[in-house]
Image 1: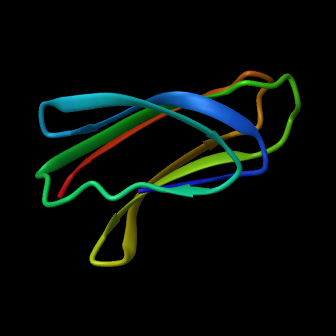
Image 2: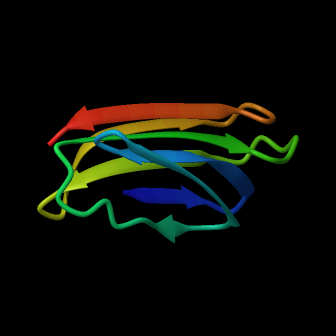
Length: 81
């Protein structure tokens, strides 16, 4: 999973039934292991209109992608692998 942004962000990621909180600033790559279902809910922590994009990858290819430019915007994305 890729989080692509220049913004500060926080949220949660899930692999099958295991969910955990994450946060950071800027781009981030999260290894989701060999999960069958992955998900993420990520929110911008700033009131800027910068892009926040979250991608789910399988075998290095993007299979699902969602994004927002809203102030304090939220991206929710999930996919079956």
